[in-house]
Amino acid sequence: TQPRADRPLLPGATLGVMGGGQLGRMFVHAAQALGYRTAVLDPDPDSPAGLVSHRHIQADYLDPVGLALLADVADAVTTEFENVPAQSLRVLAERRPVAPAGDAVAICQDRADEKAHFSRAGVPCAPHAVIRTEADLAAVPAGLLPGILKTARMGYDGKGQARVNDAAELAAAWQRLGRVACVLEQRLPLLRELSVIVARGADGQLVNFPVQQNLHRDGILAVTEVPAPDVSPQLAQQAVQCAAAIAAELGYVGVLCVEFFVLADDDGGEPRLVANEMAPRPHNSGHYTLNACDISQFELQVRAMTGLPLAPPRLHSCCVMLNLLGDLWLRDGGSTQVTPPWEQVLALPGAHLHLYGKADARPGRKMGHLTLTGPNAEAARDTALRAAALLG
Ligand code: ADP
Ligand code: MG
Image (cartoon, rainbow, N blue to C red; front, top):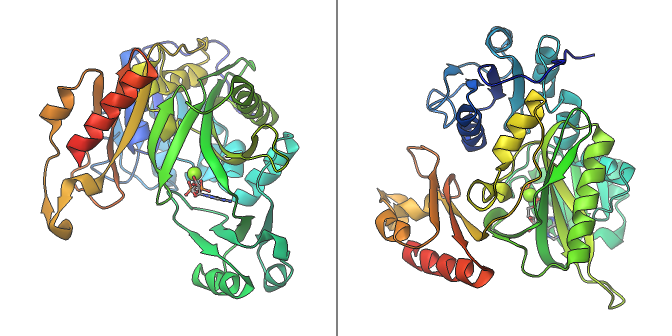
């Protein structure tokens, strides 16, 4: 029985965030725009969200003193990353409303639990097996190979994964991953990848953003396009229904993103969806909402956690979002750090640049994103191509 504000927490209250990354930073921006104060807990003195928050509690996510301080200063608490210790959210929930709840976040932290949850919600996922022991490894059905072995916990941006073709490669990969609990998934022929972001209030009200079409490179999100160019209205509706069922089954409060694979139907029918994973927070594939929707995923997180009404978002522009990875800053094999040509990029119509305030560029590190909006999909795509050419 966690404390719950019986009335909405109105602007002027302080909202706490576990984690100080870019998602926390954009959450802080949205909270502050509505007149809230913010407190970020993150051990890094230069964390992107800590840099812009009213308060920054520099403490480890498990530090009881830091958690107590956060509960002292914040009237409600949320998280910006899914690997926050669920136990810390439960501890905070003894004193303050916490959304999403630790139990929901815990499910998202474990690929095996996550897939079990998809099944509970009636949503299909990739054929898979959970590998915790030598015996599990030996019992893997041959039909799952070739597959992708993923650590059950702590994986992100394609890390903690190995592509395996046969039983010998599988055994070697499990060894390399440290024999930790893993999920082996059948490698599926993806037609494309989608995601859907929903927000659910404590009263069960649910709103959704339009379906996003995503392109990953090396396991990292590279491009998001909205409206999803290759998705039928029926498939989009199905994705939204799946995400809604997943959120409702969790009793979820807050913003939730569900990623999907689109697969060709074996019998030549309509393409079908399988859920890949979910994130208990705003998501990289929803950054476009800042510039192409009349309400952003971050503002919806603020509204959901404070008990304010959830406005159904409206897409007012077509858009393409490009992730800006550290590689763009690096030249000569990483020995020189350069500034990308922002002046030229910002001369493009509908270019919206977001940088996260990270000083050091590293390969694959998310430094910012660029959203190109336009009155129609062709215009947005054309601008995105020009931006990509400028960024080389
Ligand atoms: P992460 O947590 O690192 O995002 P994902 O499970 O989403 O891990 O995998 C990253 C990317 O790898 C996916 O977006 C997709 O492009 C590819 N991928 C993952 N699982 C499969 C699969 N079973 N079959 C084919 N491609 C996959
Ligand atoms: Mg993913």
